Amino acid sequence: MTDDTETPVPGAGGNLLSGPQPEPARAAGYPDAPPRVGFFTDTSVCIGCKACEVACKEWNAIPEDGLELTGMSYDNTQGLGADTWRHVAFIEQRKPLGGQEPGVGHESVDVFAAAG
Image (cartoon, rainbow, N blue to C red; front, side, top):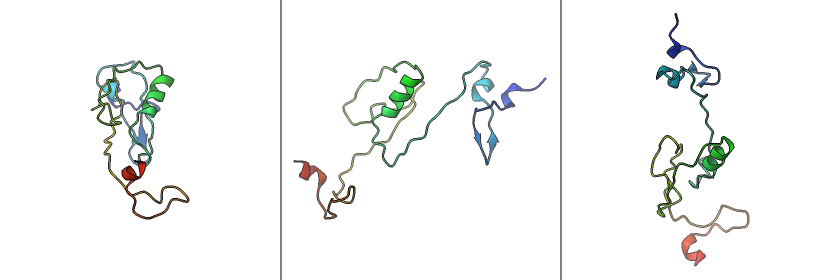
């Protein structure tokens, strides 16, 4: 008899360096666990709006997680949970305007003052 906790599941994870990984749900005693999924996020352009999480939940028919808006920032999750998969540490900072788009000058301009 083999130990199911060490049997790699196709698509369950792994990489070229470490190889296949054991299925954690099976190791916890759930023999019919659904396959694990994930997605990559380009954090250089992420503002923490959760649009990717909403789209993923909609695509996979996963119900809402009872999110309540905090009004503090774009990051409204305040943490991770069973149905809240992403928590972006969104830190709002003032940055000088310039260099982001073609035609925008490189002089030091306060973005918030320029927005009026």
